Image 1 (tube, rainbow, N blue to C red):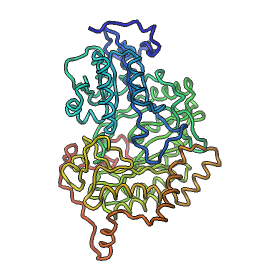
Image 2 (tube, helix red, strand yellow):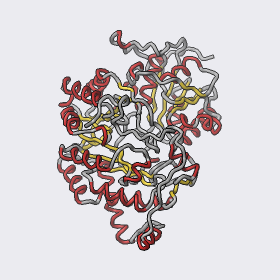
Image 3 (tube, one colour):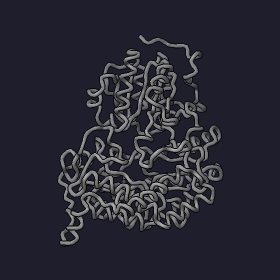
Image 4 (cartoon, one colour):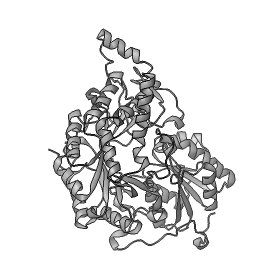
Length: 545
């Protein structure tokens, strides 16, 4: 039996506090616990897993763990005592992390994990149980949500798997210690039924991001929309109806973080901030009304088919200085195959609009889509260089569980799974798949070549020089440029080519057509084979013209 513990002697915990300032901030979905428990929430370090640019500088980008902050807020509201160990801030070792967890004397330890992080969670969970078998361990995140039974089978040390949204499931576990191990609760109609994220549990001196033209500043993360209705084949969060948060509460969070922690830059974690036109304008108007646009700046993710000039003008007025889009490919045929719902020319138009308005433009691309070829990857590289783009990320397609890409890789439908060691599912530096035309080594070569060609363009080099002379001297910000210049020299000296380059040359010499994209595998999340374009009535409140 777990009994109530006096928390006044334990400085690692923050006692649950009454943060309700009005009757409108009562959260009836949160059941108050009869037993107060100590809960330690943990985010393991991830930067070294995903790094492709080499050694990390000390003054680098770190983002607060928003998911854990929401879970912590719900647990505190239920009456529990919570602390957060964010190992990413100083890249804690597993040994040090274990000691911190044990020193906090928890009743329950909660982890969040992506696919390449799950092995580290399983290893640490076993060590915790070896030290104290009475501690309960719960894990949430995208990987365990996709493979709950498999995760339990792989790691008997885990007591609970949280599937989907974690706020109410974590409260249920902490309140009741249920006998069932796989816990899932139905998504609430509104995210605002949950308490505010428990930001007071973090030290915000660790969280930074490079403000365009200024360099590293304190940053925070938030969401105004949860869910994404689009059907991209490589994503596990797709076909989910967006739930819009109350604008007043969103801007309250911004104002509170600015006044309390001195936050200067806010990053919206919304999958598509501009999915609802009314929502964007209302958000910007409230930021402007409170004068926050003169105090802080914003970063957001958008799409080419939900953004126009009028919206960009309003976002700039509100303080947005950087916008990113998941372009994913520069091939029209590939864009259609991955169900992106956008057209190549839309990206050209929107990036032009952003560039004219001096917004820092960013994009992410993927190499290694199902049926990808040398030709389609080269199209992507040329497209990235053609558009008004100044910052770029390039990932190797990694078929995460619960995506259509994963099903394709298992079935050999234009993708072929090379290994199933979750530690290798990183997107950066290693490839766990090949396509019909491209080997794993080809994909790794193309990722490096893509970044090299992009960041050594004269216009991109000039943009980064302008950043330097206007005050952004962040070494972390300039790492892609240093990486690209170094690799440009290596490629020049070695005349480097992808391993199967001769296949491409042979096709060009003979006039042979590239491999035809012809997927026959049914997408279990998209059986009607829908491709949303952002203009569907009933999905989007107002069409973008």
